[in-house]
Length: 235
Image 1 (cartoon, one colour):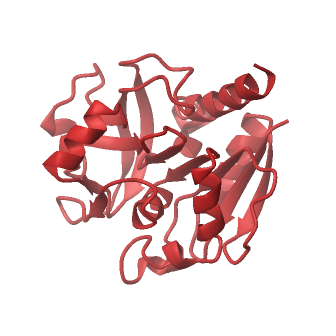
Image 2: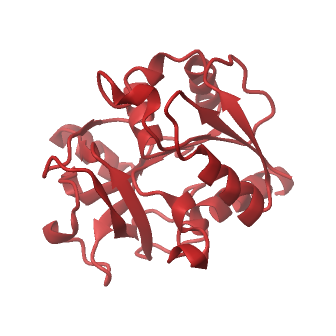
């Protein structure tokens, strides 16, 4: 059985949703990790959930980045451990330098909470391997600072390295400006680091892992992680 760790910061509010998706839907083991802990032992994947860590005071993710758990997390990622940051978790990964770029306020300066469509741009990552390139997923967003930005040089590097994993799109898969909810550069909704073991995504897969929630498409992310780890472990 896999072992997921879900980091809980003061203000996290999607940790229980992730726990439910992993244990009750995926059928794997999960443990909460309080942000003041300094150890990450025997975990297969670490989840940084959504929420308003430290109330989003100063800047989203900026205070959480200095929590005691972050140095062990960085070492865990540098050794190849799987890390997924969802919404605020994505912002924390950016602040920690585990992913390139930064987050700006949504283009309309309003909080957005609704379902969106995202196109799978790279189906060969630990987080998307049960998907197909070009597959459209319907997953909800809920954020105020999801306007992903990186300069032209950085964007070119990400494209060259296939680090762009999800892009906001229409239901038919066409990537157009009118389906970009927050103004993110190149309609980016999710990216991985250069080695592919760290994912940051603004949409919430844990909120769309059961048909009762209106979509099961988010389950592909958790199922992909499980398949990747099982393939690595049992080969």
